[in-house]
Image (cartoon, rainbow, N blue to C red):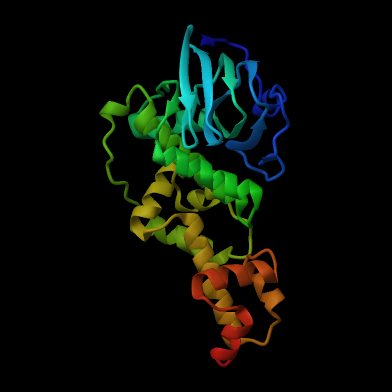
Length: 296
């Protein structure tokens, strides 16, 4: 694979694909990571220009024989569903494959990885490229991204912010030149900073808040805050936000006569149906049934 100084944006780069994406994050306002699901044609050769983002591909369906020219050498492998490919930013590649490929492409902003590396290692580090990689964490991240672009939910920008941090950390831990020296040290947040974040979330339950905004309220970087919040609370900021919205909705169902649709909007849900889905999944009951059984 040859490193090239001039690179294009992910949006322009995607146009070089032999097929249009079946689904993507382009209309969702994602800032630090892009997600694109492709059904590539059966058997093809493709020369890809350099892109100014790190390129992670999850093989979703249909085994295929794949040849790739990486670092000036050809690599040949049988790629199976669940396999991962990693190509660092600012490199061009040449690909050949046999068999139709369903894949989920993630393009991570290079500065996001650099900022995470500064926090983890104290300096920028390089990623190692490869194809046919088995990595359950990267596979889980790709599946989460695929589900979100297929059916976006309220808070999708916050979801993407957290996803980008997860992706950056997974790449740094296992696919960077400094990975062997990485220690999975616990990250802690001072109590007063955590309290600021919790208060910010409570005050903005109805809004489409981002991870950056919550971290800023705590006075921390996104990477530090995201890891420290989960260590302190036991779940991600996004999951905690959904739980608080649901608890607020329950309070309003019990204590007011407001319509369910109005309560849904006041608590940050997209509509009546979204609140119903979340409540049914979490509590096994619909909002209307909850109101009746709670005496509201």
